Length: 479
Image (cartoon, rainbow, N blue to C red):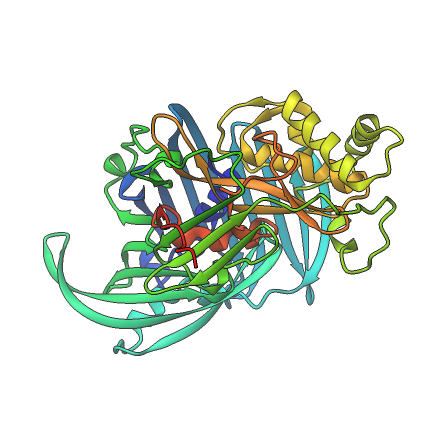
């Protein structure tokens, strides 16, 4: 399994750290990059810098991805156009995500001290007014600025970049870590190694920048690599990268009875940190000697008394609100939720009714989409992402607080292992994990939660995707 929305986030986040040369006049034009995911070709990108007739500066990024998901070929395109004044102030941002389901657009323009953002997701338009971002042209060309301004190891600069997909301004730091000699265009040239950190997302990248400010390579979170290439080579993509398999943690010994067992103990090795650790009734994760020890447990529901709607607990009410991608205030989603639950008020029974309906009425397909609930309800097809997003929207429309969850789940079969997956958690008097994709009103013990929350929170999994090794832990010795 995989979480398509989080994969989109990874690609958009990679776009956010591309560099542009600081000498705008001398570097007007375009540069082509091959895009590699887990060292396999996954697409290409073309970045450009233009000066408009009115003196404004246009920075463009156009990335196209061609990947395979369980033998199904998928195409996606992500574009961004950022316009700055001659002095470098941000004027506007326009971006698009084009996927098999359609086109989602985002446009923000600065008016005084505000940014007016218009988003069209699933055909529904929303408008938001936010504080003017701090982002400037200086931030877009940060890597070039570092290496062209008396470069020395240890030199660093802070930057800001507004991401309309998240409706957030991300901040980070780029630091020169060293210098080496490389052959570039047949000539030996100095190449600077620059580490960029976006702490809010837990993402680090390593870029190699030539002394003239050209970015030769950018490695994002050890997962995605942008490599400067001739146009014909950059565009040579053959769909060889199956992201479902390449992002999974395979096991050498299959997990016995994975869906019905009461407990499961696992050893997880790889670049996890405290931001990926979640402890609750269903799972416990503890740091051990060189690995993390995971224990999954079956929910104890025998003596549990569910709450009834309407729910009044102020602590969980924020998770009833509609969001940009979970449009639980849509009349069609509200109507569908009422149709499914009827007069039921028991929160646990409502959750089960909604989970059963989503599982029974959706056709399972793999797709690289920027998913939203309205489109899923319209088409009733998709993978774990679409199943969970629709369930969450219906739950919120029915009055149940619900959240997105991402992580890994065990899948048996030809290539047994723990695959990237998305499910949901819902408040029924306590938080429970629900997996409508697997028809589980209570998620089984093989679900490893690594992120919890919206698209932005899920992006924090990027540094560990495809880099974990998992094996069943030895049974504890009896007293």
